[in-house]
Amino acid sequence: MGGPERIAAIGAARLVRGYGLAGVAVATAENDRAVLDAWRALGPDVTVVIVTPAAARAVAAAGGPGGRLLAVLPEPGGSP
Image (cartoon, rainbow, N blue to C red; front, side, top):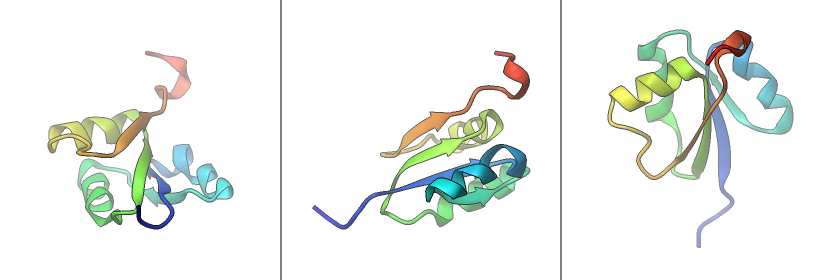
């Protein structure tokens, strides 16, 4: 087994920046290209990624999360 596993969050700054207070590695991304750039920059020790719905759609369109667990936040404003 390798070193400690990490958690990251990717998405719109207003939705993910607070996770940094809990030690989560935060990458703000306001469009699909920025999401994918942040996704590709994740280290191999990142095993769980918290994403906004828009970021989840970008990751899915690019082939999915691979071996990482993807936790999708609810839509802003509570709409499904």
